[in-house]
Each structure stands twice: as structure tokens, then as C-alpha cells.
Image (tube, rainbow, N blue to C red; front, side, top):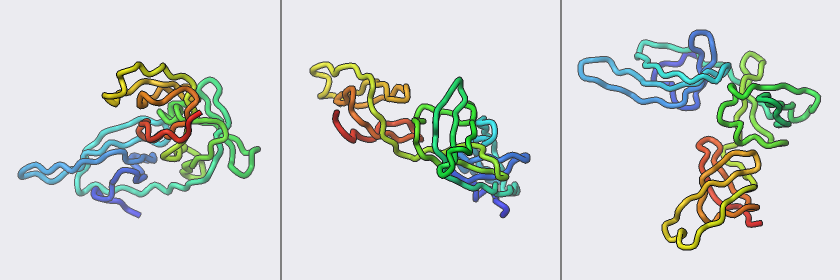
Length: 190
């Protein structure tokens, strides 16, 4: 299917210069006496690099034939992240950190996630939008701080450092938005 400028929205996969990309952000620009353009930020699904380009109404793109399949994250070793087919643990594959990007901060063993396939080859993975993590290190809240609704930094089980409210303690289970890296809520106290 052919995609026009107005079909490019965040989350849409398209082919540009022979490679698959996903749209991250778009902004319509309308300048006086000029044709409208679409300011676009998109990510190469093969190498993880992000690009910004302006497209015209006359630009046409091919929709990338993307298929999703459930996979399980196993472990990481020296910037290589190993996964297996959800139903067949013998079917293993690895992806490098540069392709996965910031999502590596939220990968924990045995998490089932969505693999993105292009031309029958796994090119990336997508985490669930919200995931739960155990807080492994948290500085104590200082008395008097809570009235301001302040934040502090804690370390979660994957090693990532996250900003959370002051009432979060070591051992708590917290829910995070994996796309933004933001704290959502406390799920359970120790």
C-alpha cells in the first residue's frame, strides 16, 4: 500500500531509501505562499539511528510489511541481548544494544515482548507499554521533603535509575511507562 505525507503518523512503519523506518513524531508546517510540508522524526529499524526530514505532499512511500511475534527475553552479555521464540526456547536470536536503544534499561529475564519482523527477519523488539519492577536501591526520604511532593532517584532491578516520588522505598514494586521511562504508580509495598 502506498502512503502519502498525511499517512505518516507516530507508530507507522514505512520504507524510505530501501530500509524500514518507524515514525516517531510529525508536525505539519504551513508557510504562507508555500506548499505544506511535514516535519518528521523517524527511526531506522535496522540500525536504530534516528533521522529528521521534511516531506512534501508529492512524496509517496511504501508501507513496510511488518509482522509481530511474541518472544521471550533471556539474558544479556556484553551488549548482546538474547531472546527466544515464546513457544520454542531452542529458537534463539540476539540483537545488539544499538538496535534496541533505550529499551534495554527495561529488559528483564523471561519478559515476553513483541518482536518486529521485516522480510521474515527479526529486526527489533517492542516492550509492553507498562511494566513492573522491583526497587533495589532507594535513598531514604528526608523528613519535611514530602510536603513539596518531591522526587528522588532509585535503582530498579535492571540497573536503570528512575525518578520516583519520595515515598518509594527499597523493595517496593513500581509500575513504569517503558516508552517514556516515567514512574506510573506503586504496585506493592515490600
